[in-house]
Image (cartoon, rainbow, N blue to C red; front, side):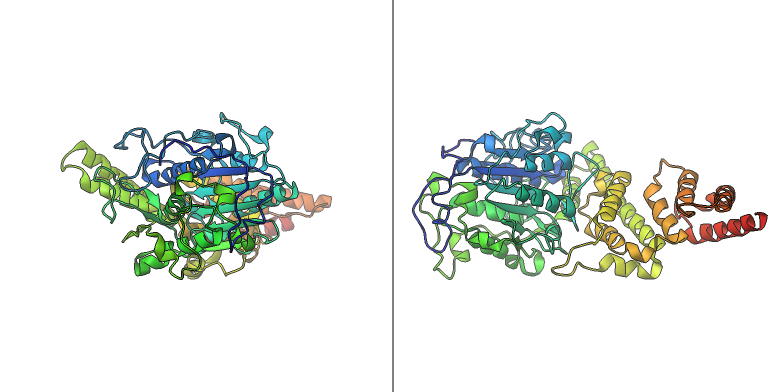
Length: 540
């Protein structure tokens, strides 16, 4: 497989009917195929995500899709990274061919962000920002759309490298509904490779949008990297990073070798589900899920991806009970959790470096930095949960799972504010792949009513946590949150207004210094404010 394309039209063309699929239904439909490919990470330790996207591009290009109909989001920082042993070349499996050649650079660097992705999906050129190609999904009512996302994720979010914001479930589902209301597609297929990727659709993707989504994992588990150093099959020794992700390489290596006119989405789902989950037993793997309009699973892959003419008539018959086993795809003997793949990279890099060398010292610094940052994130989240819900509830808040068929949270605006504020102040390296921490923020969003924002203590604690950063003096946040949380009636009487300003002035002078960078001290501040209120009542 290389950058050479086999020219088939991006339009869905006529072909013979094959049993057990929807091929006949699509036979006379005029329409185009569109594809949006997103690698949501950057950094050489995340090599596999951009490799996945490049590989997907080659499949679509060899399937006959035109570049004008394939839109690629990738940071584009690994092909020529100094750590890449083959500059200008990206591979997606050991001894694999170059998948980087010919890939369009539609949106790269900081242009890989939530705003641009949603603008591209909705065909809204005026909403685009940055220096991208300007390509959008300018689709019509008879067109088919394929979306593939690969990167880190967490409960209710998918990461993006080019902004402080992550893509939340609410933003994605809202955009999909808008696309449906605009009648700008016939059907849509979405593949998502990320930890907790099921949470993006669980209980939220309607079945009547003609959208079929497949995720690498359910709402509560990691997805997995593969072709990693030290594993089997392993990349050549000069590679110290994983080359692919299990779910992604499973569907792509299947698509590489088969005539996609004869394989349905449901057949590929079953194959990928087995390879991603059951083939690894206790050593890893995840439960591949399907959501939305599952009837679309009867469509042939050709409808969305085209097919490589070199694979004509090469397929396993659906009547074969051993369909999954008959296609001879490789099985890796070991996989690594997405969130631990970076640790594997830094650890392998450290072990491989020569003793006493500058490379060894630098590798040790990177490894210790990663471990230290993870510890800091754990401690920060524990502190937030302790402040809001009490020490006795920390374990419950961190370890609870999303219920099957239920949305992750009820208040998505609160959740989005918490996650983006947290990522902004903790840094992008906190990566929403740290699922336990993000799940805790989801619990804060879902349990916001338990905080009782109508009480001073609840209002003040939540306000202070969202305000405070290492660069913001505690006193500044304390004053801001006192002004917000010392309540007064909407239409106060002159006496009530006098009492409010007296109380605020007293609290600013006497209570604001009770908050520290480690703890807002909500209850202590609350008691102090009550004392000020009594003093002001006596004066008035």
